Image (cartoon, rainbow, N blue to C red; front, side):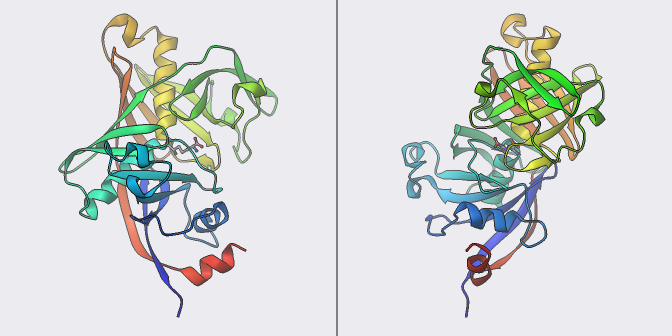
Length: 289
Ligand SMILES: N[C@@H](CCC[C@H](N)C(=O)O)C(=O)O
């Protein structure tokens, strides 16, 4: 009889994840296994995978264990590793509370992008302290077909290129990663956001995520977009001394992003667990030769 591996499925603004609880880090999850689990036809399906591990049990997180008991070992749908996932960390925290590992209130979660504070309210949306954005200097261009746009390089722990466009349809079908230049701007690839204005401090985006393709939302991407838009609008909180709050519509819902004068960014949005079950470990072995 084959062993079973517990899993859950969740999403944040329809950025969806396979969740694998593995407190002691005993489940082997090579890239091919992650890709098989995230496969929408032959697997469970997801933009990414949240491997839930105690920080003390993971070599990449041990140094953060005193600050944050739990480590979000985030993987993209193609099996690649990413530094941070803004929607994922809300879903991760929601899972921890649902499983009884943490209570409501503020909890610390270790990520490859550092320790993040997540506020779990009694009910409703979850707020994450996303840290500060870095805005590396230098011109970046992204293209889709014949069209090209200047893009703002924003790092939220992971890399983003934010392009303001006239029409979100100009981003095309986004099956393939949009080419960017110069290549040296993103040696490890990039998440690309296409943005249009919707109103006062209100924008909408489409995104091509590195390692996942077009997704219905990207939390770090929404933060990158809010920061890029604030700079474009002359609403840099460090200069004005007042927080800038942007509503960012994504295909899968809405995220609210606030940047404070000290540069700290908070993101608020939903986190949903939709199912739980068991994976046949025998299938996973055959799916990952
Ligand atoms: N969907 C995430 C971002 C996930 C990682 C990204 N694809 C990368 O490779 O950097 C989010 O909500 O932030």
